[in-house]
Image 1: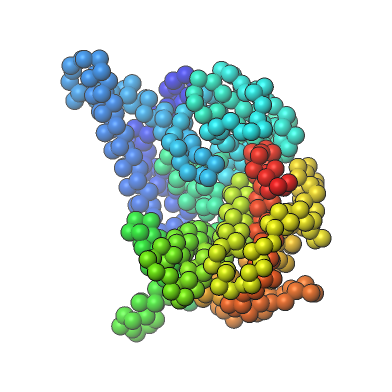
Image 2: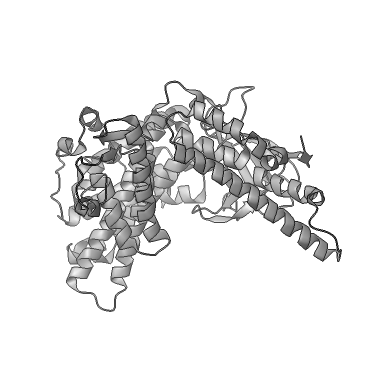
Length: 536
């Protein structure tokens, strides 16, 4: 097997994999009998696209190298591209995306064997992070030059590396790792169902994952939930699969309105219809057939819905900013901007709650859920401190010292008293804080969800126990009831805004931020941001 500096190039599989395509397709069909033919053909087309890009990239690399060396030669002979092919395949196989703290891509990088030899698992026991700048609390003594070693971080073992490359990184355990157990990380998005993970791993790295999560029979709860349907009137599994593909295309088209066409309003309208009705409303205007088409409604944890929550949280926020950017601000525009802001915050909270529910069954999702809690907290805090509240609240709320909320201790959870818990304490804190956030959410959710037909179907975006009764029905709407609240709390009517709501939003936001930062310490260690939200 070809290697450069100890790193596998995977060239034989990437370049000559065409000969194995039929063999792979057969084994893939055996492992995934429910996936339709279009998906399998799409995977083959993607493979061919990768091969074509490798060929094009190889020629360009060879041409540039010869230009730099002032060499002439016949570039038509394929055997002359072997070195370029090996280098390009090495990058494709071993490169990882470098991200900043906000998750935005800063490019890709190839690291040495200490990192590149760490294998993949869909239920990994470690995660990695890149440091694009010195953290305030990081000590130079933890920096390793031209080598790597294991360091005791208190919350788990941490491998930190720094050498001749610009961006050092750390690998930190996120689960208890037994002696002799292999350290693994994730090469793909863990919030994808099994079939999508397997297809992506094969396309990028030419291997099929056989981790415990992938080989589990029946599927793990998380993989089941990521593909579950809450309602369908289809008569056959084949019809259901076709309708799922059609619905997926509708989701992609709606999201494309925002990401590619820059039309957040159209995106929000289409996604709301898809979430609430399982189809676009304009489909109802088409001539009716002898038999009504199948209508699907997906489980709140379905991977397509998670993508929709993410998009809606962003699109509604942009839509509100666009409204406020108009030359004149009428009262109706302020109200519409306020409503879109709070709907954005509501979807951020729903996303955090849904992923947190999955996290309780798969602890490897800790990095994702930490980011979502922080994002939800920041969104709620921005809403609570927005100047738009001046139109609804008494001025005295503006004079409340924000720092006074941060110094308060919660009577329901011990979060403020445990900035760096051990594993046993963490399990208890996870239970306490999720219950506390669910309770605080019940006091403001009806106000946050009032402008969205889909959000009004969600009783509580944090406590999903209400889904137990809905599981027995084909229609989620039949099981919408008033949210349960603790004594002393009151369910707010839709659209009601007062000082108490603003204060409850701030308290909820702080809990989300603190919990997110607490979970992030598992992945990244205690940081300056954690101290900020704990002690400021």
